[in-house]
Picture (cartoon, rainbow, N blue to C red):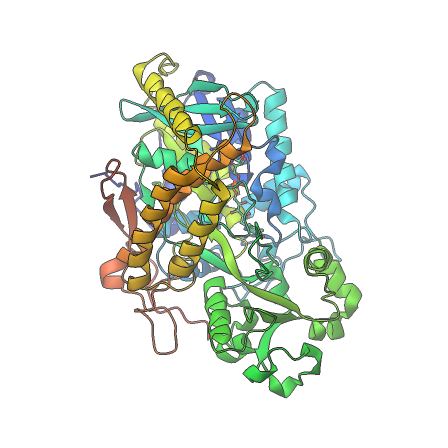
Length: 640
Ligand SMILES: Cc1cc2nc3c(=O)[nH]c(=O)nc-3n(C[C@H](O)[C@H](O)[C@H](O)COP(=O)(O)OP(=O)(O)OC[C@H]3O[C@@H](n4cnc5c(N)ncnc54)[C@H](O)[C@@H]3O)c2cc1C
């Protein structure tokens, strides 16, 4: 069984991080340049980590499958980034951000990590402003804030609807400085296909050059994975199409535990699915819920009636009705389930009946069209381009979609996995969001991990490793890992059936959404655990992966990723089946209160489930890290 030592520091909660930084081991400045660190990923988490590590003096090799770090999925983030600055003077504080995040995650995250996140949140904004990130400002010049779900203060900093892009440009500038200074070597179009473990420590990776097909070995003193989330296991999601699980899945198969894989976030405000041939879904940022009001007709007979002709008294602003304190700004899991319920009642709008209105008429009355355009113009443009509807004139139609994965590789307080030397950052780890992430908290976490946490904590590990002692890439472990990648490539290319990889991805997505989406049940999950292995067998028997391995071959790239999703999907369903409670985004039909809210079981499930690979064909082992709350009292979440 894996050993899960969270290494949570002792002492009062507000002092833990300060004390930890003062206590952990250091690497002396002249030794830093003797350590090489591999960072896989250059989204917000990977780029900020690479830049900061290089600035400290470490030698960094950064690998991305994209053709530029600027294409990382982080660029898609629209709404904003949280920080406890309390600029609007509306009562925010580190403690309140901490509390909201713990409660938002339905008491399934590690207390000390979340407190640290809230503490460093303000530093992130200072750092990004110093880099020139053009956050929106108030008339007096102070940075502007807006509200996001699950909070009663305004603490979200934003750059129109392009916050991720602007933050990524900041991190990319810092990364470029490291590249120019020689501290970072960037490898683009280079996909990590395996992790190399030597004497129980992560010491390297195997990489495929996506243009030439060349397979190379890379050794380091430590490996950092910042490879993003795995929501594309559902096929249709708001993720960039290329986002995948390969790096963390290979690390899992090399011994890193996978924590809470079933914790998936379904975002309530996305453009509804329109047909079978769609390849992705589009988010309409949560920031829109600051001014947009969500409703459906009270009577189901009205669901196809033009919205403008439905009088106020015949509309059901159901979030405002059910959750008067938080209204349209209740957390995502709560808002998504409420949308599902009204659609299940037959009151959903649009052709499919799977939609609710997000209506700006009140806001336009209050702020004028120009005021709304100034705040959300680019989001209205995206909506118009996709639906051909003008949301200044008719309400948007929205529906929940897969958006974020709270699960990921298990990490301790130092962001190190149970495999020594393997660190995991950003969406790829499970660390801070529990069973539900609050909006605008992912950017905060990725940048906290990269700029402010890892640069301290990695030293604690490296100080235990002799400088310049990394293994040779000729060692048997590297040879074996490379052979395993070559074998997997050959196996994929020898599949000569009839159906393209996308066919299996679509069917997997359908199983995942139906059986393990917004609502899960024992029967449904048990069925999924039969269906997914059968689909996997069909993939290997009847899939087709055209082309060769020695050149650009996007079918092969996709095949690798889908093959991994076909395994990960099973683990997700297994995790969901074993967690006999409802919490946050994990809603089990059998465990709910009469009003449909989540019924947690704190006696039996107040823990992290960290799954350990036990070998091909064997059931994985479920390890447990208990969650001990010292400062927070666990209670039933209430947004009413
Ligand atoms: C549409 C949308 C809007 C969002 N808006 C917000 C928001 O407003 N606020 C907020 O807080 N969060 C938001 N999020 C969530 C947030 O954007 C992500 O969680 C976050 O950006 C993830 O950052 P990351 O650095 O962990 O990963 P990513 O940005 O996904 O970067 C992953 C990196 O890893 C590389 N990579 C992956 N696998 C491999 C491999 N095998 N080999 C080599 N390289 C690899 C990629 O090339 C890339 O560089 C949004 C998400 C979506 C989908």
